[in-house]
Length: 367
Image (cartoon, rainbow, N blue to C red; front, side):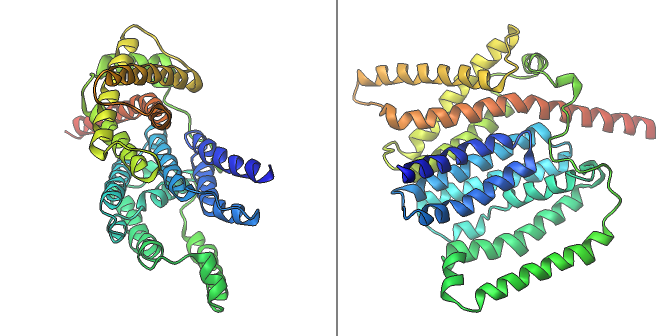
């Protein structure tokens, strides 16, 4: 009984904590990172080794990183940093799909998860400084430093050498003290070298996300923006298909019991994404919107369950078929990410348009 409580508590937390990221970006993503590192240790402390958990662990990693990406659509004001962030996220997902399809572990070294720490770096800066004060070159240097000095060694350690920190500390007597000493040195460098050279802070500590632009802060204004600027099949729809399609392919490869091929999963997600976009645009043009994210999710989820039921009924008349139990998890995943993407993409688009208008005004003044 205790083991079941611990297991489901950890699994629930793995899915619940990412939902904090849009409103509390840095605390939310750090909490996900810590729980991801500690979950196996928690299970071992209770003498439990859940079957298939390693597969679900990968799936939940992809989930929280995907929520973090949608949070950057909602919150990030620096478009240069966001462009780098988008590239890093999609680059990693492409590499993860290539690894799942081929089994070649070196691909994870070529496609490192730089996105995660870049997201943390941006949000760390934002806690005290305005990200807009830093240009494209600064954020490129941040991404390059994370890629070269943090992620490449980490990816090699985990996926090429296939070493584990806990096991190495246990098996190699000098490793634990050396690791502790390295951490102390890093802290001393940050306190006595980096901290005195930091520029004056722009504001007091900010852990919550900044307020949204007033012009697009509520759901009705986002719906109006969507109705005016979006089409059923446009650049945003393509990005959503790529984003959720790649994630779903990864889920299909790592989760047990999924029989559909990667191509079938991707095409199925693409069809669902287009149908969802059409329904969302139809609702937006008629002024329908939901301020509550929970209500928005329920609407999207119920809609997709109905679509899956119709697909299952149609396929049951032919040679195909859908295993609804396996499909339900994908519907849940798809619905959450679709809701978050559709909810936050208009905010990002508004900021892009505002930045372009500001740049045009500066150029006109300069003449």
